[in-house]
Image (cartoon, rainbow, N blue to C red; front, side, top):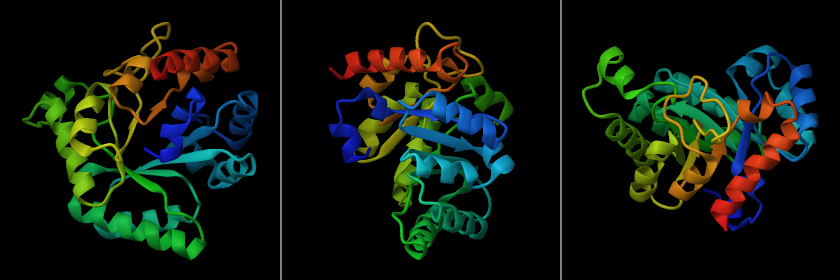
Length: 248
């Protein structure tokens, strides 16, 4: 977790809102509709559609950026992708822990190289432990992984840390154990966060924002309860109040 996030008393600093929209115009409209949001996530749908344009718009507005492209390939390809992505001057960048130790280590060095070439700070690399849309049953029966889900998430996080990765993406249900084992300086980003008044959607392993912060999450990714609300700014404020109570 960044020191600034730890020191801040503003709950808004702990939220990342995804730009899960199909094009640049929709992204700009959403960004402008919720000026209170400081940290935005650009994922595969928007990046494939619009390229770097959303990142450039976010930088022009002074926003922080989570580039969530979840790289997963052979080490040389993952390294090249991280090297290129680091040039966008984003704050967080994702790859799958299951790409393996060689890919994770190569990604760390490549991201530094790309950032140095662009004259910017390297992003914090985050390893995806297990997608929060997957349940323990999915892990066991579909993916044929013979260990329990919490243990698998912990193994992926510790592999990432040992490979030089700066943090992990995990379910809030695993975050307390990952925080205990990986330490205070390991950034933990939690999707699968839903306030008690919001629908769960396709997330299987969920927790409320206040619970996730109390468990040790660095940042929370909250999308549809905010972006699909009739008044997104009001919904964002309501969730911030919940986290503010947890931080108090």
